[in-house]
Every structure is written in structure tokens, then in C-alpha cells.
Length: 276
Image (cartoon, rainbow, N blue to C red; front, side, top):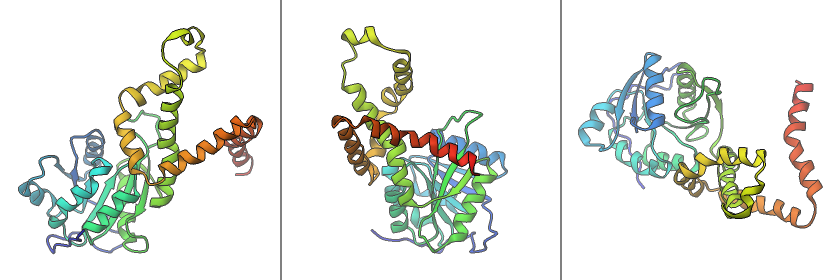
């Protein structure tokens, strides 16, 4: 893989006070792309929308002079898209992405582009509720370099109404493997363990019915997305193996140990409130 650093328009600087005033948004027709475009424009930011087909003419026009090029594309396409757009970027323009996996997409961006790279992950969907906390993980593409770019992306997030917090690619992906990946595959396994028909229908409890309702969209509409995220996350299988070890405790009769371990989610939160 080659790194591209074309000496075209280079609006960004290494000034720590640099503010993003314009962005070229690749994947602007997607749900998250539409949300970002709307919020950015509401904040007074110039948004140049890009989507397939990414022709030379459209890329050259949208990227020239943009402070940031933001990839809102599937995680498995990040490397390919970064390769496509890199020849049109100046060496100090920021290249960033939004995606639920960070290790491999960041590796693809840094391999294709020698300038500043920043990874982000909005921890919410393209249609967040009014009460949702719009938290965004933000991380250096090359730790120890171009911190000004990461600061600028964090400031942009705050400006458009998001709540950024610092992260790292490995830390993020290990957490996502649990929060998203493991939740997805264990829900699949749990429901696949019992046929949907038959006598079990006569014994559904309210709590089980609530669990079914929570899982319906995940499985019937978003399964392809979460399957791709599971496969792209390098820590997914490790999370499943760890989960399997806890299932083995149940097989061995150590359910009380599992209960105490699970209770930590609430006891730890109580301890935080008692000792702020």
C-alpha cells in the first residue's frame, strides 16, 4: 500500500487553535452522513457532499480547500475510499472517519495518506432521540503526532452538538467487541437455541417479551451491518472466547459466582456516587 501526500490546497496548519470551517463529506447520502451534514451546516460550517460515483471531477472540486475530508462509509470500505481520495488531498488537510471499528480503518487511512489522520466513532445512530447523549470517541490516527488535528476534530464535534471524549484504537475496539459485537452474537445464539414455534410460545414472560422487542431490529434489519462490524473488529473472537469461559462456569454449577460478577455493574456505579 502506498501513502499519498499531494501538494495541493493545504488549508490546515499545526496551530493548536486551528478550527475546522469546511469539510468534504464522503458518504453524504447515508444516514450518519445526512445527520453530520445537517448539524455542520447549522453550525455555519461549509459542507461539500460526496457520494458514489466518486469521479475525478467531483473529488477535485469538493476536496480542494477543505479543512477536513470525513469518510462516512462502511468500515470495510475505508481503505479503498481512502486510496481513492488521497491523491486529491494536501499534506495538512485532515482525513477522518466515522465508524464502529477503528484499528483496521485507521491503519488503512494512515497507509494511504501521509497527512494528519483522526478516527472517530459516534456512539449513537443516525436518528438519535432528543434525550440521547451524543458521545463521540475521538483518537489520534498516529499517536504522538498531529495532536492539533485531533484537537480540531474534537472541537468540531463539540461545535455541532456532539460530546467528544479522547480514546485509542485498541481501547475502542476492545470495548466495541463487547458492547456491540458480543451483544449481537450472544443475542443470536440465545434466540437460535430455541425454535420460535411450538409450546414455548405458551410460556413467554413479560421480561422475555421485552427482550424479543429489543432484539427485533438488531436481527431483522441490522444483522448485515453488525455481522460486518463483528468480522472487522480484531477483538471480536477474543470477546466470544471470554464469554464462553463464563458459560462454562454455569455448566459447572457456579451460578452464584456469575451473579456476583454481574452485580459489579451496579455496585461499582453505586460506589462512584458515594465517593465522587
